[in-house]
Length: 184
Image: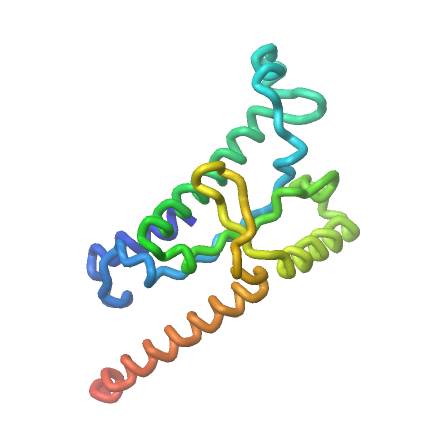
């Protein structure tokens, strides 16, 4: 997500003719949907006290888990979401950034390598349930995700984004129609 936003900003700075001429910091013209792969953040936390007693092996493998890898993968995702949330909120454009992710996966659902029919069907159910849940956003002070007041569900947010995209496409088509007629 961060790389995509950066690439669009770079192309705007270069005045790419395929992009509408706006300032790269005009975040109300961006429309970002960031879709996560899910995680089990509630079940994989470690206390600082416990971690302070681990050696190299403990960081690589502890109680059937891999704390070091978990820390890096969670940190990477969390930092990108935090950064994007800060930037979009700072430019009063938070309604144009939507992060969709489920961080309470349990058991086989949180594994990235169990592709059984049953597990995939259960993941579909998780996704369907997530669509019906309230839109949440990271609280920049606590780092916790909190439902947005009057934010609706993820399904409603996606419908709103689809409408914005449709309107943008119609606008671009209407703006490019006279140019195409002149070419003919």
